[in-house]
Every structure is written in structure tokens, then in C-alpha cells.
Amino acid sequence: MDSVGIGALPDAGLYGDEGSNTLVNIARAVGGLHLPHLGRLGLGNIEPIPGVPPAAGPDGAYGRMAERSAGKDTTTGHWEMSGIVLERPFPTYPHGFPPEVIAAFQERTGRPVLGNKAASGTVIIEELGAEHMRTGYPIVYTSADSVFQIAAHEEIIPLEQLYQMCQTARELLTGEHAVGRVIARPFTGRPGSFQRTANRRDFSLTPPAKTILDLLREKGLAVMAVGKIEDIFAGRGITAALHTRGNMDGVDATLRFMQGSERGLIFTNLVDFDMLYGHRNNPRGYADALEAFDRRLPEITAALRPDEVLMITADHGCDPTTSSNDHSREYVPLLVYGRPVRAGVNLGTRRSFTDIAATMAAFFGFTFPAGESFAGQVLSESLRRDW
Image 1 (cartoon, rainbow, N blue to C red):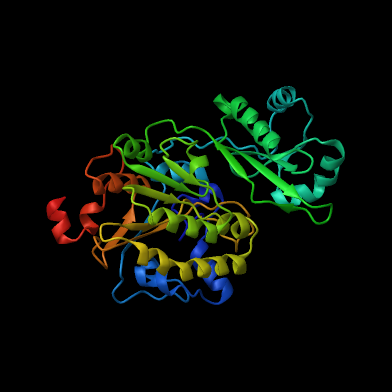
Image 2 (image 1 turned 120 degrees about the vertical axis):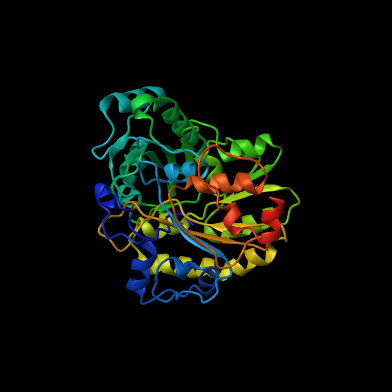
């Protein structure tokens, strides 16, 4: 659940995120959340959430995880879940990219650029969209995250050409300027009514070390990516991928993979929480998206086979009730459910997202060098004996 944080980390002040708590603050802002299915798994047992009381006997194991890596962005969070801890954050550009970066990009693409500043994506296309349509120059901008974003109208710069521009930027942005992601931000419409489309594409750095995805694939297991997971890992360790157009499409794609017979991992990112509501400071929309996912959750749990385990977590926070429209440095929830899982186990506060990688490795019968597995805590007694 992209950006669904559950409380500021101890070092949140270093990031300007004191008091952030995505789930709790949204619940307070809207008069309580209605999340009965997540609640039954133990969400309200992690921390009191208005509208989501603690379950007397949770159906799942529950806890929260702290991020060890420096940063609070999508790539950092997902990479840490997969077993990589970053000691230094990716570079950011609050005042735009330096002249040498822009000059190299313009030379390679053969076009000047518009923008080159930190901005909201929806705001900058309204500001510069008309000039972009008149000149054909791409709009380059960034945010508080480590991103180089290129916005272009689909009728002015066709998608494949926009994607090629992003690939060019990805090749240029190395060394000290190795941003976490280059993002294609296509839009349509006319001045005053521009709309971003679902044809976004992310061009991420290649992970600097072996991840649990790589290891699973090496062991002959399937790694099925839903949403922007394939992009976040630059395709590494992925055996099949379904790109999606929002949360509900992501749930549908997850269910399609679950109906298959392959043994391995399905790794899903539901991006709407973050992209549509967190960054736009829209607690009501965020709450509605949470409740919509909760309504679909029984379809996922019903589709679980006797030997399958579901883990629900997040990559960072993005509290829409604060003045910032940036990600927030938060704990993330951890819910674990399935027939092999002991109900009601309190997993406490995990010291790193890498515990997920270590636990997945243990589930499949091997070890991973990073993280502390909680497989022994959550597996039922008979399975723990076998394990």
C-alpha cells in the first residue's frame, strides 16, 4: 500500500516530518476510517486508529517496521524490503538540476527544456503546458524526492519518444547525479483542463546488490510484479509483470497471478494512495481509497491457497494532513495472514524493512544475508517443526 505510513520515526525531525502519521491523521481528519477487514487482520492493534479498534483476537500477525535506510522515497523503501539498506540518500534538487545536467540532456535530445524546478506535477503542466504545446519543448521538473520528471502532451511528444527521452536521462544521471528515478509524466487535454494519463513509466537505477527477487529467480521460483514494481527494480529479478492503471486494476492483476500455478512471489504496488491523494493533500480521497481496498481484501484472502501467505505493508508515509505534499518519514504497518500463520502474533517493531526479505527466504527454505526473519514467530507449530 504505497505511502500508508503509521507514525513518525524517531529521526523524522531530520526530514521535517515531526507529527506525521498517515493512517491516524487521515482517520482523525475524516471522522474515522471504516476498515473492517484490515482491522480483523490486526491493523488497529498496531496503533489506535479512529474507526479501526484493536481486534480482540486478530486473524493475522501484526507489527510495524522502521526504515534503516537514509531517505523516504519509493525506491529506497522497496529496495529495503528486498534486502538492500542504503547508507546515503539519493540526491535531490530543490532548486532544479545544475546547468551541466540540463545541457547534456538538451544536447542528447536535441530540444531545449521548460521548467527545471521543483514543482507539483499537476501545477507545472497548467503553468507550462500551453508553452510546451506551442514549442514542443519537454517540461523537466523534480520534487522533494530524488526524481527527474519529464512531462509531455501525448499529441506533442508521442509516448515512445517520451520514454526514449527518459531513457536518455537515465543514462546521463549517474555518479553524483544518480537520482533514484526518471519518470515519464504524459498528459492530455487543452490549457485549463490538462489531465495526466495512466501511461506514466518509471526508469529506476539498477539495485546495487542482489535482492531477494534475484535470489528467488535464481532458485527457479517465479517473481510476478504488479504495478510499478518492475520499474522500481529496473526489471531485475522479475519473471513476469503486469503494469496497472490504479489500485483496483492492481488488485485485479494480483488476483490473476494468484489464479496461476507458479510457485514464488507476487509483489504488488498499489500507487493511488500516494500519487492521487497523499501528494495532493487530500485526506478524504485517501480515506476513500483505503476503504475501497479494504472492500476488495476478502477477494484476496479467499483466493489464498493452504500453503500461501499474504503480507501487507508500505514503503514510506505521505501524510495528506500536513502542510507538506512530500513523503513522510514513518513506520509502516506489517500484517501477515494465511493458513500457515499463527493468528494474533505481535511482531512488535521490526528494526528494518529487510526483515521481509529474510522472512521470504525462510519461507522458501533458504537464507538471506540481510534482515531478521520472523518466519519462526508466525508459522504454525507444525510448520515450525518442519521448518
